[in-house]
Amino acid sequence: MNIATALLDQIKARQLDVLFQMEEQMARQSKASIVEAIGDAEKADAQDKMRLYMLYVLANEGLKQADREECEAALRAAGCDLAPLEYLIKLRSLNRMSTAVAAPSGSGTGSGGSGVAGGDLLGKFSSISTRLAGLTDSSSLAGILSGVRNLLPSNKQLPVTRIVDALMSGRAAASSGGSSRGIGINIRGAAGGSGGSGASAAKLVENYVHFDPKQARRGNLAGSNVSADSAGVSHDAIVFMVGGGNYVEYQNLCEFAQHATPRRNIVYGATDIVNADGFLQQLARLNQSK
Image: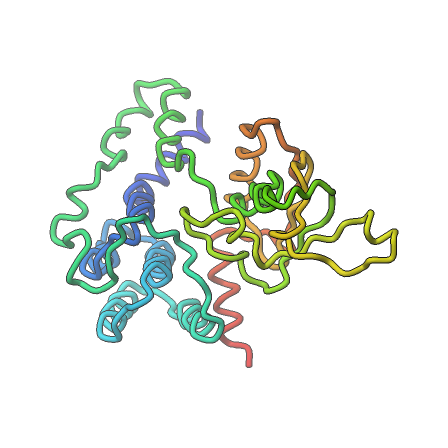
């Protein structure tokens, strides 16, 4: 009970429910709504504001320089360290990294001309903080946890989960009749094709190579393109992220494995497991390195 009430207190104190709902609709946010959220004194955590703006930058390709400068000025006024943001922008410009936030089908632009109006944005959000305000005094643990679960996205697959689904289901090679088992490796370092919700299975895994152990025993050590010669339906997989991993991806993969038909067995690993604050610290250190 003490853990649940402490968790609820943190959600209310940092307004995580409001930030979560903004993240879910990030592609439709306007510059004015982001500036308003950054300047909101009730959102006291500077790192929360920095992560919110970083998501906004990733979700909006055509962000104007003037809008960026206004948002960055608001971040400085809120006490944010801009080093993580500087490295993210540098990395994006160098590698043309694809957006980390999947834009909905009716996405808006990043400039102040469209999206949710900033003046009444926070009033339009249905904040669960107010609805849960009395739970710690009068409700059971189950009731508190039920409210907390409202913060979790429902039936939403992250890019890594969609890629694993495509690789394990064999949909990418349905037309080729591939049925062997093997290893899929991303050879371009990106998330594997387009991560959008409308991307086909073949598009998701177009940068992956399939290595068939049966072919290796015959002396054929070269891998083949997944879309041309993919493994059939697989029940077991090891997903390893070269670089930072996180518990959100792990949990999303676990939910996919439990609800898939038939059930899948997935082991998740990474070079390092980082939380949100640790991720910002890593970006700041990378920005300092020459």
